[in-house]
Structure formats: structure tokens, C-alpha cells
Image 1 (tube, one colour):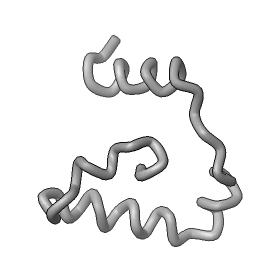
Image 2: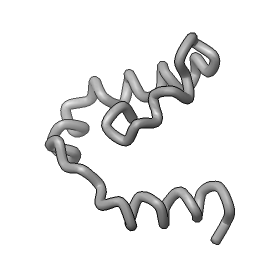
Image 3: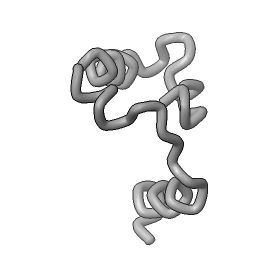
Image 4: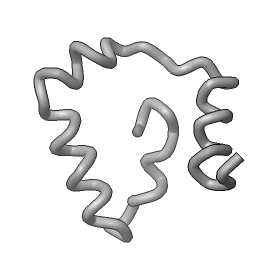
Length: 56
């Protein structure tokens, strides 16, 4: 989530469950295989966020 600039969502331990979940996710061997430092293209990222937050 740091790569996508969303780490501010749990700064100061405001959402400890989210932070703990992403820490566990990143520690999995499959995470590095799947992500490999790739960046999501901005249009794809925005489309995903629209679906998540606005149901569009």
C-alpha cells in the first residue's frame, strides 16, 4: 500500500487491523512473486477505487 500511496490510511495506528493485515500479506512469499515491484497503471487504479468506494 505504500507503493500506491495509501499508507496514510493507517498512520498513527488509527486502523491497526488494516496495518496488521498488510504486514502479513507482504510477508508471504507469494506477495513478491505476484507484485515484483510492478506499478498499477493510474487508469486501472482509479477504476478499481471507483468500484470500491462508489460502486461504479
